[in-house]
Length: 108
Image 1 (cartoon, helix red, strand yellow):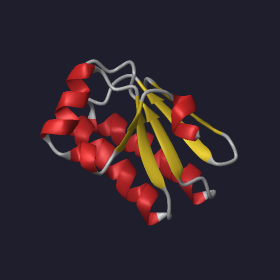
Image 2 (cartoon, rainbow, N blue to C red):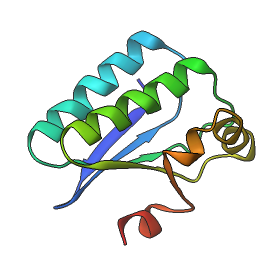
Image 3 (tube, one colour):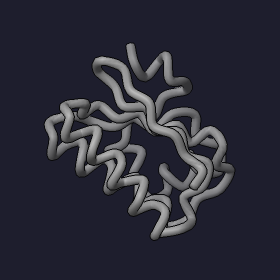
Image 4 (cartoon, rainbow, N blue to C red):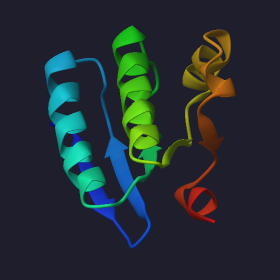
């Protein structure tokens, strides 16, 4: 799988390279949930390496957001490509998902 999860005292940082496979996405989400159960409920999803996204990727982002909210936190998507940003705008997800140009901006 092409992802990594790191955390600091307040943020979970998930870097993903591909969100096209539902089975892989479920594994990633399970790993994210483990971290959220430890008390880190602010999730930053770095999608800078994803050029395009389909409904499987959108569903993944929605699932991460729902789980973060369930734990009293939130989610920020970092550095989406122009195509992915346009998809988030068309689907109106940009109105409920925080979008930031960088991890540093998202943690401030």
